[in-house]
Amino acid sequence: MMVFSQMEAGKALTTAAANGRTVEVQMILEELRVHPDTPNEFGRTALQVMMMGSPKIATLLLQNGADANIQDKHGIAPVHDAARTGFLDTLQVLVEFGASVNLPDHRGALPIHIAIREGHCNIVEFLAPRSDLKHANTSGQTAVDVARASCVPGMIDLLFAHIHS
Image (cartoon, one colour):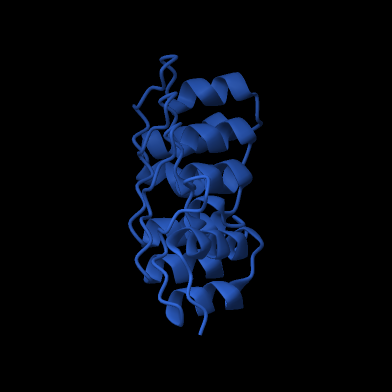
C-alpha cells in the first residue's frame, strides 16, 4: 500500500479526474481514502479540474463528499464550468448533489448568463426554471439582457417562456 502525502494525494486525484480516468478516481477515493476536496499543488480540487464531460467522475466525487459549490479565486464554481462547456449531464449531476445555480462569479455572472453567452440552448432550458432570472451581473445585465446581446436565435424566446410561466 502506497502512502501519499496530502499534496501527492491531491495531485493524483486531480490528475485522474482531469484525464477522465474513472477507475483511478474511484480507487483513490475508496481504497486510498483520499478526501475528494484534497487540493493539488495549484490549490484546485478534483471537481474543479475534472473533465467536464465525465458525469461518472462528478458523481463519484460528490458521493464521496466533494463540495459541489466550491469556488476558485474568480468565484467560478463547477456549475459555471459545466454551463460554459455545455455538458448538461454533468450539470444535472452537480445540481442533484446540491450545487447552486445562483452562485455568482466575480463578475456577477450566474451559470445561466454563461450558458446564454456560449449559445448552449439545452443548458439554458435546464437552468432557466432554477435560476434567479432577475439577477444582474456586475455590468447590470440580467439573463434577458445577455440573451439580447448574444444574438443566438431563439434564446430570448427560451427565457421568456420561463419568465412568464
